[in-house]
Every structure is written in structure tokens, then in C-alpha cells.
Image 1 (cartoon, each protein chain N blue to C red):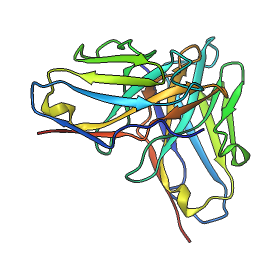
Image 2 (image 1 turned 45 degrees about the horizontal axis):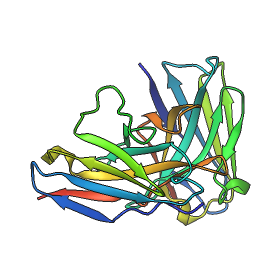
Image 3 (image 1 turned 120 degrees about the vertical axis):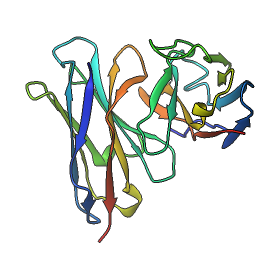
Image 4 (image 1 turned 60 degrees about the vertical axis):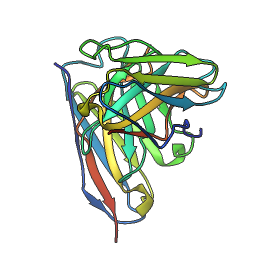
Length: 110
Length: 120
């Protein structure tokens, strides 16, 4: 049950779009539609941004969008804002009927 | 309004057993499809999924920690308890509990987390 692989850091200027990748295997991301994304500000609990690959819960800005291709899922943040500076984690259902998180990505707004 | 709150010791000694309680409101295990899970995060590190229990008492555990974990629920008290045996300094982390619907594999409501330090 290895962690999903994310880039350690991604940065962008205000107004730009950035994409965070999340790479797993055919035992998790590749075979299931249960990829979710979380945003975590320092010393705060994670906040659900995306569930089931591309579904935004109520109240989540449409600047956040998710997709998946093969064993890699992606989170795109468009119109980057200062408040988007945070850590981001992906997560997926795993074939052994458990759940696995990603290694985390620190987003910096330049 | 769904809320969850973790409680338990802030400091445990190596080899001791940790017992954490998640007390929640706004939902009930009497409702079909409800699940509560535990996730931890060592300081400065990534989230790690630990365990889950659902309304039918189905339990799921991280494969790497399964031998040390037990998760139980108390429907009447609206609580979920996680025990972790043989604590080690590497288990120092903030422990979160969170709500999930069984048919979805995403946690939509989280507690604020509780920091547990393992040290002699």
C-alpha cells in the first residue's frame, strides 16, 4: 500500500493555472473512479476539494477541477489566488479495500 | 451541521497503547452508509490513512498497521474509538477523525486533529 506520488512543490503567479499530478497504479488510481483531493492550510485540518475524480462538493470554487488518465489523476487550479497557497493531497481507493493518500504538494503563489 | 472532535492523551510512552476517541454530531451510525475513519499526519509530513468503521460494523485497516490497530464504534454515544498498540516515537503525529459516506472514498468532514507525542 504505497503512497501515491505527487510533485513536492508547484508554483505559479496570481491569475495563472497550475496542475498537480497524482500517480498511482492499476491497483488504485488506474482502476477506480474514487480519487479525491484535499487542501490543507498550515495547522488546519484537510478540506475536501474534489471527490470521485471530478466532483466538487457544494461550496467549492469552480476554479478547482479534477481529471484522470490511466494511473495518473490531476488537480488544476485556475485563476490562482494568494489564498490557494497551501498543501494539496490526493487520495484513492485501493484494491485491498482501503484508502491511500498522496505524498503531498506544496503550492506557492509567487 | 456535522462536527467531529478528537480526544485523548497528548503524550504517551514508547510501548504503551494509545486510545483516541472521536465524538461527533450531525449524523448517526443508525443511518445507512455512514462511516468514520482515522487519518494521521506526522509533523511536516503527509497524511496517512489508518482505519475505518461503517454503520454495519465493517472495519478496514491500513495493511502496514493492521496488527496494531483496532477501531470500534459506539452508536449510542456517537463515538468512534481507535486503539494503537506498541507506540513508537515514529507514531508521533496529529491524528484526525473524519466522516465519509461508504459509497464514496472521500472524507467530507474532518475533526481539528489532536497531536500525540510518543516520548519517554
